Image (tube, rainbow, N blue to C red):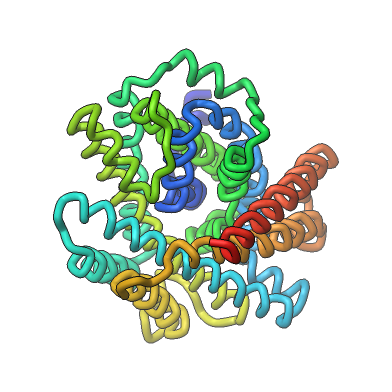
Length: 413
C-alpha cells in the first residue's frame, strides 16, 4: 500500500502544472480588479458566489484536461477536425480579439503596480514585455512551466494581505455560504461579473494544449484530474482573500475603485506591509498573465489552422506560433504607452466578445467529450452530463447577461 501511495504521489508531481497554472492565472489583472471592486463596494456580501464559481470551473476544466489526455490533441485541433475549418476560423478570430484586450489589461496592471513605486510605465512595460518574450522564445516547456509554477506560489501575498487587513472573519465566513441578493443594478452586475469572468474561453484552449504538450496520457489522468481540481480550489481561496482584504480596507467607507492599484492604496491605511503585499501580488499576477494569454492564443490559432505550435519548438520550427506570440506582446504592451488610449472601453469590448464566444466553446466541449469515437470509455457519465449541461446553461445565462451589461456600458459611457 505504501509503495502504491508513493507511486501515485510521484505521478501527481510529474503531471502537476497545466491545471494548476490555468486556474491560478484566472486571477489576472482583470480578475483582481473585479474581486477588489466587489470587496471595496459591497464588503463581504458577494463572497457566496465563489463556491458556484469553483464548481463551474472544476466541471469545465476537468472536461478539457480529460480530452487532452485521452485524444492527445488540443481543443481547437479537435474542433477543426470535427466541425470544419470555417467554424474554427471564426472562433479563432473572436478569441484573438478578446485575448488581445486582456493582454492590454495585464500590461496595464504591470504599469499601475510599479507606478505606485515611482517607476514610469515607459520603463516597466517595455521591460515586462522583453522578459515575457525572452522567457517563452528562449525557454523549453519544462523550464517555462517551472517559472509559471513559481509565479503561482507568489499569490500567497494576497492571503497575507487579507490577514493584515484585519477583516470581520465571522461576517466573511457567514457570507461565504449565505446567498445575498440585493436588487440593485450595480450589485447584480458585480455578481454576474464575478461568476461570468471566472470561466474564460482562453482557459479551455490553453489547458488542453498544455496537457498535450506536457505529454499527459489517459493512464496518468487520475492524478492530473486531482491537479486540476486543486488548482480550481486554490484559485477560489485567493479570490476569497482579495475580496476580504478590500472589504476590510474599505469597511465603513465603501466606494468604487478605478483599478486594482486603487485597492492597494486603500490597504495602505492599514499598514505598509499590506500595501506592499497587494502591490507585489498585482505585479506578479499581471506579468504571469501577460505570459499565459498570448501563449494561449498562439497555441489555439496554430492548432486550429494546422500550424506547428509549442514552446518545445524553436523559432524556425514554428514561425507562425512565435510571430503571433510576438505580435500580441508588441501590440498589447504598445497600446499602454499611447497617451489617452481607451483601455477601459477595450476591456468592456473583450467582455462582450467573451460573452458571445464562451457558450459556443462550452457547447463544442460537451459535444466532443461525449463522442465515443474520440473518447472511448472516457466519455461523460449520465450524471456528469447533467452537471456539464447545467454548467453550460448557467454560463450561457451569466455570460449573456454580462455581455449585455458590458455592451450597454460600452455604448453609453
